[in-house]
Image 1: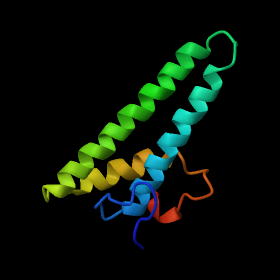
Image 2: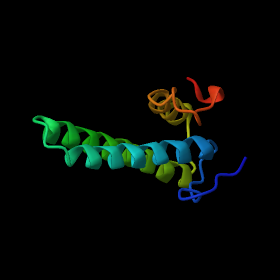
Image 3: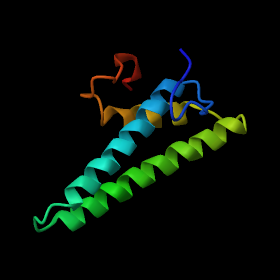
Image 4: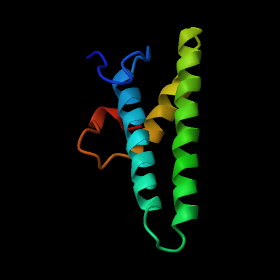
Length: 100
């Protein structure tokens, strides 16, 4: 099934998983920015953590995309994407075949 939408240019064999992950990172960042609006103490550290986490995961996926373009895709990359995806296993669009 070809990837569609915002991240459709990703050439990965698991393009749907990659698109799913990048969309979840977007949602995480959006939620963190919403929480940032709350005056509750401690939110600043939580928001900063969530934003750093999403950025790091996004960089990892982009790194894997670069490896794919170089023809250097391997099982480690597939496994890492599946492990990252496991974080979102309760999301309604998560697919059972993505489990590690």
